[in-house]
Image: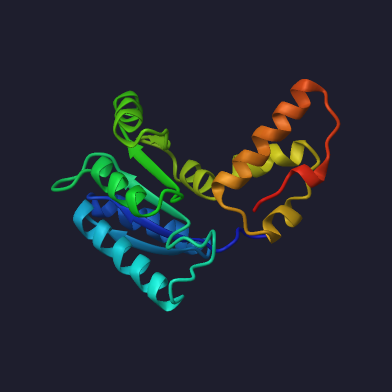
Length: 189
């Protein structure tokens, strides 16, 4: 079974790297929008967010996001990745954001201080397989399978990244506490 189609926004100022990301992700049936700086990324995000909001006549579906993932280069000219993340999270606190950074420690400290939350980080340079696995939550789904979770049923709910990682954390706690699993307590909504 191939990966579920995702809508991905990338902000990367090195166009050869951005083109590689786009090519690989589109080959996996994802829809990819590439921007070359923070300003264009924000404009693209806000335009699509507004379009969704107005087309749903102010009744947006509860967990519908303009993009499944926003991949941000941490250091960009004009508006850097941290400023872009702050603006996106201000309008949509549930947006999944992944920073690509050569300076992971600095990015982590900065994200906690400025965003008041930890976002996902990928240390540059990384392999293209690592990028795909991270975006598609492959490691999370692999770990869920170790708990004998039926991944097809989970995916049928079209969970957000936060929901599947929450499910995984709950299962880890249950295993650690050696408790009995009650599937009714694992709700997505």
